[in-house]
Image (cartoon, rainbow, N blue to C red):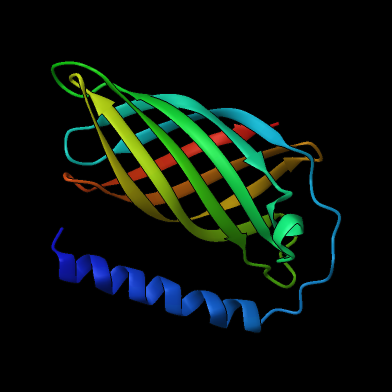
Length: 163
């Protein structure tokens, strides 16, 4: 990706977040407990399939007094052609409340990404968006699209379940 397209994507996302925050009257809610679960990812640029796990910490917003702010960490093992590599992510997300749709929780966010493969590592950053879906009172599924900006930037679609 070119630097101009990266700047354009970041500008649009960063410009949309304050508008989304201002448009909401978010009541103070009791945060969910820490959640964890497996995930499957499909990456562009020859990354193919990845499997891994995710831990979601909903208390970030309470720590910095921003309702709807959460953090998550994930680790995925990718199986590209000719070898394997792993990726670790640390992201912050902001939940966007949709009136009248209690079982759907969209979010936007960003963070850091570290990719390691072929004996070398690369630190980059993420811009992402996704949604959680309530499956049962204690189970949630999620779908997420993430652009990881590295020397070799790529798009990753991730799906999983949280307990």
